[in-house]
Amino acid sequence: MTDGYIWAVVIGMAVANFAVRIVPVAVLSRLRLPRPVERWLSYIPVSVMAALVVGEVLRPGGDWRSLADNPYLLAAIPTALIYHRWRSFLGATVAGVLFFLAFRALLG
Image 1 (tube, rainbow, N blue to C red):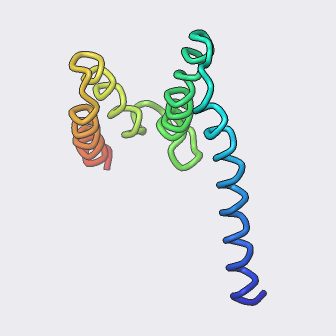
Image 2: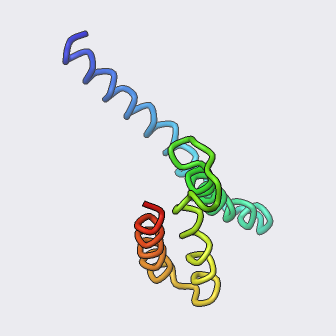
């Protein structure tokens, strides 16, 4: 494969991806959706984020680990509690990083 062919495929995929995503956004931005549909759509971002995070927390690197050997899961528990208590995404993120570093250092 030549460099030109690879770049053509990358650019073609980018254009196709953009076209597939922009059409629904352009159409839906002009419509007034019913309240139940808007409410249902509002859960999509948090559902996607939860699916991504939970997979990595429970199976870091694709391997199942016990609670005592999983710094990701150990750090996720107090991080979730901190977010639940103060509702601060930034605070929970900083706390999560610090908890993760502490548990990783403790577990070796």
